[in-house]
Length: 154
Image 1: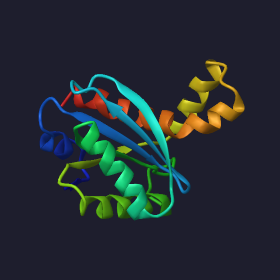
Image 2: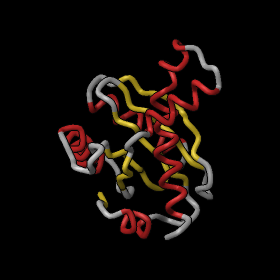
Image 3: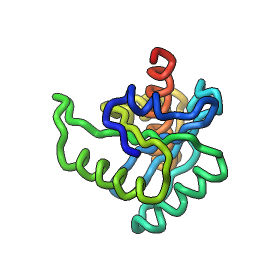
Image 4: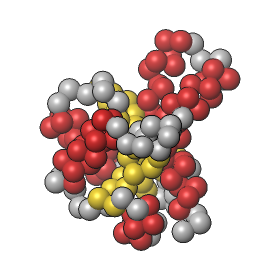
């Protein structure tokens, strides 16, 4: 089930289960996962987008392998908080994904997550090539960590 309000998403989660965070891009999907206690988000991989059936098959494989209990999608709001075409695309992806899993699906405001990820990679002196390979799943880690931090106060 898709939950627009983060508090609703939080209440739908089973206790002691890992979460998966997604950073949806036009060409890639960054994937991060948490530990079962939901303390730490770890960047996992970047899925090269082909078509929804192939992309979702990989995501469901991760859900199964990692015993994921909920999915957090980064919602790319505009800087003024409004929703544009990228938000509509993310919501459509969530609706399609909902047909494949009974897991709760929630959204997390991802404004500046890629900027934060890029800054962290620059500070770690990561090469430009390597940054390009990991930026999406590092950004997914920032999205998921933000959600995990919020869950501690709900």
